[in-house]
Length: 240
Image (tube, rainbow, N blue to C red; front, side, top):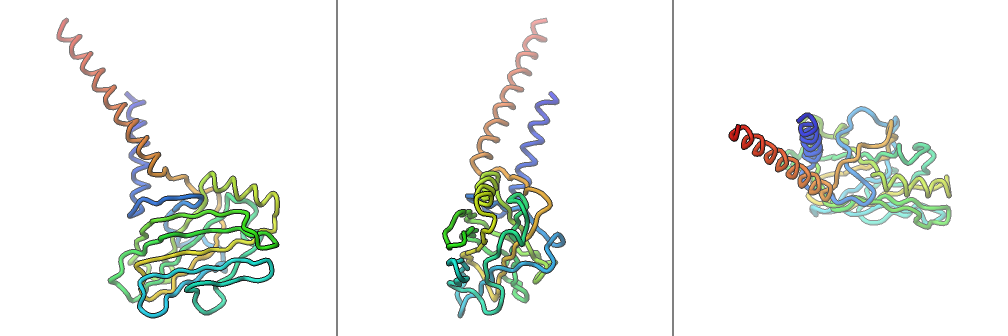
């Protein structure tokens, strides 16, 4: 019986974590971690700032390394907040890489969430070749009404496979530079800013949708097994 309830507790815990996100995210290297208001690098390493032109509800753009210079593209905003960063200035292991997203929609209370169509992390070698690419797609992030503006950071990290791939690339070349690109929809005034952060340890690994299906199937099987045991016990007691 105790084993049964331990399985139930595991399933409920996983569902609670998944409930922090409004939609099912599809990750290939990057995972959603959660809110982050305090544990940040000081000063922050801001790498991408997006602001649409006109009244478009969509922003898309990024920064990459061409071997000599940073190349900006799309709706990058003016100012010094769009650049690639050498990994060694952030940390020493792919375990500790975090990406902060500042939802900067102050004064626009009608906007409840921003949709990340895609957020992509790319590592470049000295010649500008991409040696690592990871992304996350299709996720709605609710704004924190109690802390709009500079405090509204949410954090991303790498999944286990992404950590392994980036670490292998770093072993081959410790001088990799990291750049970000993103497409956001449902935005208002902006700008929305991304920065790199150093985590204290690897991010928690949230089960992906496929894993959740398997977990639900397993829980259903456990429940059916328990019902069968109860039925047999009831029949035996009736016969006695």
